[in-house]
Length: 123
Image (cartoon, rainbow, N blue to C red; front, side, top):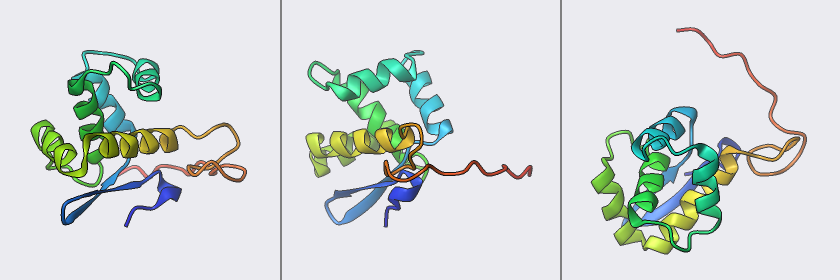
């Protein structure tokens, strides 16, 4: 089950529920797949999906799947979108994208004072 506190959003496609989330690595993979388009450019396209290329939409959904479903390929993301409904899948990915960039002073759900940064453990 998706945890909105972690920026996760559920996407149901047929009998399968996927968890969408934009991590730093997912965003970097998305930028690379889209030929170096910046995160700001991608965000602007998600805010107004009118005229968005389907390849861009599929890339966004694919990147959102990477964290919890790392074996999903780009073509698989297109299949998931078809089953879930293109509009539904893109809306879920857009919500996950918004949760990845909460407003100043808010947590991933857009509430409270915001998450306190934790120290990353070296591994």
